[in-house]
Every structure is written in C-alpha cells, then in structure tokens.
Image (cartoon, rainbow, N blue to C red; front, side):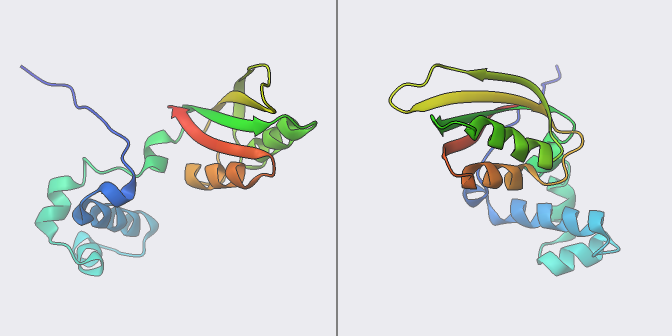
Length: 146
C-alpha cells in the first residue's frame, strides 16, 4: 500500500534548524556557490547524512510554486487607483494575472483576490508579497492558495 505524500507550508522559524540548513545547502549547490555536497554541508554545518536524508523533502516555497497559479488575497483601502497600482506591482514582477475578484468595499476596505501565473516571475514570491504589503493602501497581503 503506497501513501501519497502530504505537504505543508510552515513558517521558517517553526522548522528544526536542520531543515533550514538543508535548504541552504541546496541553494548553495544550485547557485554554484558550493561545487559538491561535501562542500555545501561543510558550509552549512550539517552532516552529509542529514543532507541526504532530507534533501528531497525540503523545498523552499519559491521553488515549489514556480510555474504555478498562485491566488493572493489582499485587504485594500477603498482608494481610487489603488487596484491599478497593485496590478502594476504584479506586472513589474513578471506575474501574469489570470483572475481578479473583489467584493464591494465596506468600512473603507475591500478584499481582493488575484490569481496569477508565476512562470516568469523576476522576483521571489516572498519579495512580491513584501512589495504588495509595502504598497500604500494595502492593509494585508497573503498567499491564499497555490
């Protein structure tokens, strides 16, 4: 009987340190900063056995979501031009907007969901979320589904 793997999105501070180090070792290998697994594990201060044990189970969120459709949920102030500004942030990041849904604003804010294809992103999903959150008029920005 085979079991399908289950996946969870977990904030990095809640993970055991070994998982973070495995992710960093994988990054070092993929960028060429480390030429071998031995070098990457030495640089991150983990054993090779720990690296091999977890390498296929630990994936950075960005790598997992590349090329997928991600749904973002934003809470926005009801201001003229703000949605256009938000769409500009997506466009500048290379996201292809698939759908936009908005509820009628109440109490000066509106919930907007935007689904975007992430194949051609020029920034990480974390950077995109930071840019959205930093936009004046955005109360909250988060990934809803992906």
